[in-house]
Amino acid sequence: MAEKKSDRTRAAILAAARERFGADGYERATIRAIAADAAIDPAMVMRYYGSKEKLFAAAAEFDVRLPDLSGVPREQAGEVLVRHLIERWEEDDTLRVLLRTAVTNESAAERMRQVFIGQLTPAFERAAVDQPAVRAGLIATQALGFALCRYILAFEPIATLSTDRAVAWLGPTITRYLTAPDPSQV
Image (tube, rainbow, N blue to C red; front, side, top):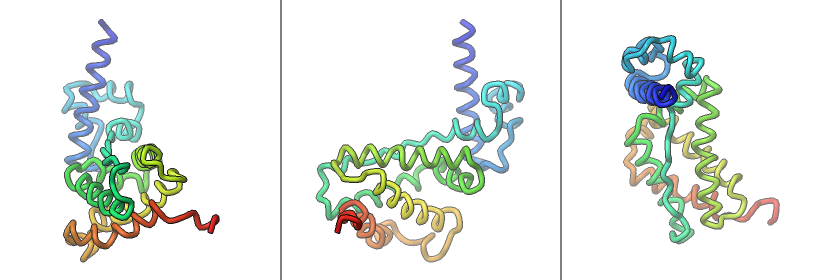
């Protein structure tokens, strides 16, 4: 019975943390506010997670929900992937909060690595892309750089660029990262 109560407590803390981090961002969210939202003592948050950073890393679950690229013609793969990533960025604050925090916080940076490299690499393996980890890393540089400039730094005109125009600009680069031969083999 005690195990079930601890599972419910953990779940309540994570749900409250996701809401609070999403609403307030990492810097303004406090353990006290998260505990109040979960209707528990702040000491319980620390007991289960140890620190705000560790709580954030646990709460920042994000599934990129990558499309299956195995049936997509290679010359269109970049456009499909870019459109999908922009849609995911725009429908869920979690990734924006995670990106903002990852720049200065190692736990959040590790979570970001897990999200991008940990989800892109297996998807590229399934699509029979050679050197999936290298290609995933290169694509992450573009996706995260674009997201940083669009959603965090609000660079114009990138911040207001339509999805179609962003796809038209970034798609060919991502396609190149997915399909180009290894430069060391050429």
